[in-house]
Image (cartoon, rainbow, N blue to C red; front, side, top):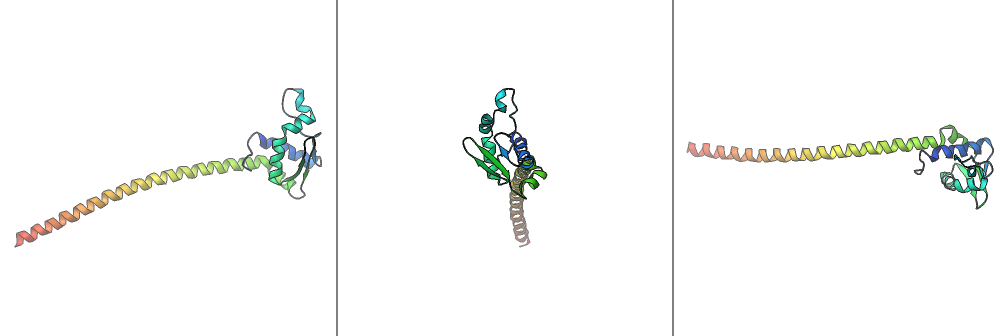
Length: 151
């Protein structure tokens, strides 16, 4: 249900509420479209306007949706629709999607910081390795000179 956003979540919840409390949704009892013109109250206009919402409802599996060119019937599924609506409905799903997106964003930032730290650590290790090799050669050279002077 990734296609739920802040605009369509309340509308989907309105449709669910009508489905639960009015024993189903038909084109006659669809919620009015919030607009200034009279067309938002015409059943056929509302039917066309809500087509995308019907698709989301059908894919969610929370209600039974029967839609054709001029009729719609949305019926609740016993034991599924009401508990889903009581737990927050699509608005809650939208909030969870926002939280997951924020969590993913934080994980990406964490990965970037860890990568930068890893690169710095590798550079530091290379410098330490080079200094160690130089120290070994200097020590070997000092030992060779002290042996040479002892002879």
